[in-house]
Amino acid sequence: MKVAVIVFPGSNCDFDVYYALKEVSGIPAELVWHKEKSLKGFNGAVLPGGFSYGDYLRAGAIAKFSPVMEEVKKFALEGKPVLGICNGFQILTEAGILPGALLRNKNLKFLCQDVYLRVENKNPIFMKYLKEGDVIKLPIAHMDGNYFCDEETLKDLIEKGQIAFRYSSPDGEIKENSKFNPNGSLYSIAGVLNREGNVLGMMPHPERYVEKLLGSKDGLYIFKSLKKFFTG
Amino acid sequence: MKAKLEVFLKETVLDPQGKAIKEALEKLGFDKIVDLRVGKIFYVELDLEDREKAKEILEEAAEKLLCNKIIESYKIIL
Image (cartoon, rainbow over all chains, first blue to last red; front, side, top):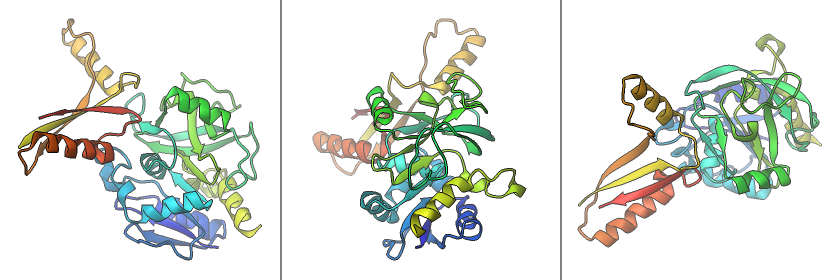
């Protein structure tokens, strides 16, 4: 098993993800420059946070044409795990690998804070150690995290169980128009899965909370689940 | 030939930037401006004179990159 951490020009969470995977979770990982045309030898990919191409045009809009994205699309179709965090999530939606789009935060402010997330899914790849209704705390750091999709897509996401996380209060209560949904996301959506469940995109940063020293270890639930998926 | 491509958020998509600007104008006394939405304009120069062909190229550029049709619409002005 080996996971590729894709590095775009402007990625800035690449080394944090690499550290969380390799050093903390024991998942072999390698940084892969976005111009690579092949992901041969890798079993999964993580698109880290940052500001690929300076967020020009729209966050993730230019990165989706990076050569490596053809391989990421293949991974998505082949059922290999693909995780997009923050800007990585934006790139996955821009590329059409995940549904919806990330709009400017409702209050027009860059948000850098902890959020509470209610687990909405028991996805076996990324959320094996979490169950529906659990609440975890992770940090967000973004300008464009306001999840949006049309009504039909939302209905579909709910019906097919593709919503992974929703912003909530510490006790798991969802209040869409409150400080517990800081960026104004539709239906308080913080993370979504593709239909097959092997692609997860999320605005919060699990890689930033993987050690007690960092404030919390809640991000480890996701990386440990990924490791379990690989090692069985 | 020169052309313009306007990209704007769909009516159903909230435009907090437009709202903030409208409120700022209101505070300056512009009480006749009741709604304002922010969009983007791309000023494009094309190496051809055929209007139909230009439209075709700009449409393709909009669909592929310049416009995210989940949240935006576009208009080509030749």
